[in-house]
Image (cartoon, rainbow, N blue to C red; front, side, top):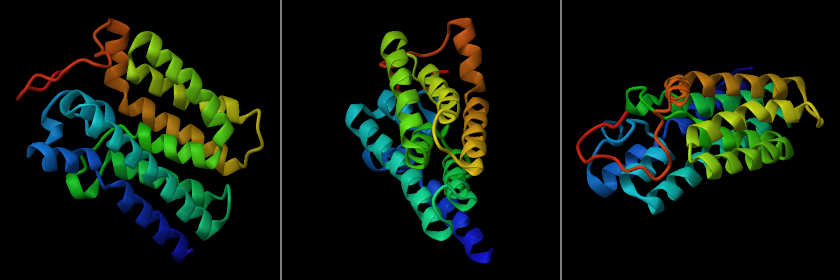
Length: 205
């Protein structure tokens, strides 16, 4: 049990590495959480730093989730509570990073890595629908919510373990909680669309 708890803690510490914050400091000497939406994630990186850094942040955040699940799988087996727990720990780390005063992102990119590693085909099906919604509406937040909401649904039509099903529901709950302000803005028609630029020196909410 002690070893399993250790790998979950390591996964949290891995998830706490905020590539968006680090890249913004390296490239512009700024705290990205003071610009754009104030979020430390790939979408705000796109808004503040541009496409190249945003793609890099997206890839690295996804890889955090993949690495955490594989670490848990090594420790506890495929589809185990440990594997799922490590994935969730990485998402928690991204959202509330210990290295950056617990002010992180919304965890969707890391959740993509976690879900795609735990249950690839359900995540892929949900991801295709999410991408189509983003292309049609230009709302990344809406696509993110569609992805985390549909993945557990599609998982029901595949082979799954109890930890995987519960883990997918917990991940969805985290995402909806972190996107609660976006949900309000979507309902009011005030949500920022992909491609909108940040105002230099100001937060755009």
